[in-house]
Length: 257
Image (cartoon, helix red, strand yellow):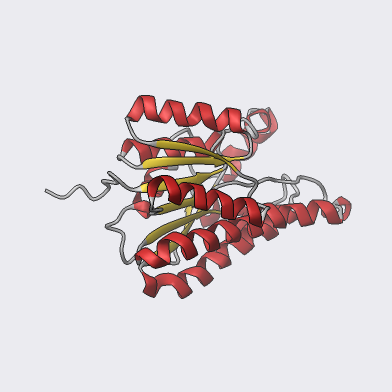
């Protein structure tokens, strides 16, 4: 009997793995047996996450502090991971930010920061891990966390730099899938809809946004904790050998209308 989603012994790097969706996806992969590298800027938080994953799932973990906008830090982080594990099988590029303001009021610095973290940081992680681990091994699963806002515009929360950066992540995914597919590396993207995290909780729980959800989302609600897990596990699976360059919305149907 095949277990299509067994990740035992594999090494998964999850960026933005200090809170929210990154931690949820790390737990999902650990539940399937993957060893987890929790990567984010705040060492105290990723230390806690790594300990919880090890204690709960019995997998090996490593907490690596890294600012993904720094090429030097990204390079050093990948070297540290390779030194411990000797392999990186899965990368979930989850780290990101979001500037919300009318487009006419967005500053150059806000736009540049959004691009630097969400788009350029995603590329830096993928480039370094592909070069040092996945291309030499002839195997890899890269999952870029974009957003449904990388596919559509919106009227409720003006965030043009976020839309632009996540739209860039969507097509960067296709570009890398095109380049690296023949090297045994699949590159896919998940586009989450509205999910409650520490960053979004206050906004999503407001009466205004609740009414908006009932109007705009076919399922009439936000995403719940754990509802991204199956998409991440599917795309990380060694059995998903012919799934490449896919843009997968997990948004309750928001982008189908």
